[in-house]
Image (cartoon, rainbow, N blue to C red):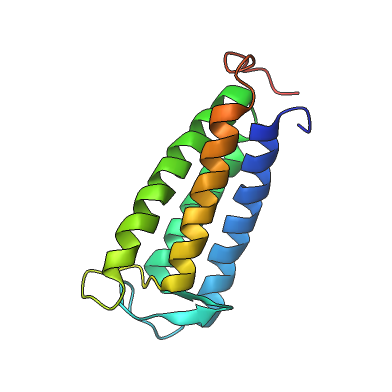
Length: 135
């Protein structure tokens, strides 16, 4: 796995996002499922819906880390989604449309994650993109 930056990044990000999703449920007891204001997990505001999103992203990244092609495609897809969420999130804070309880720290993290996922997805493993065998 260490020979593929995309597989390594997908595995690390997948594990981190799964752990964040699970930890989020510890702090969101009593918070509405899609409440516009959640509870803080470190600097980041979360609600149960936000936790489920983290679990789904974590699982997708971990599953994709099994092959270079899947990892690269998933890194690019999730990176693009996070770029969109990071930009749109700037306008959602303090509005009724903020159903995943985003705050400024979330937006910064989503934009940073997007840059890293897209950067590695676009730059690394181009010659191995067709390889699907796990190693």
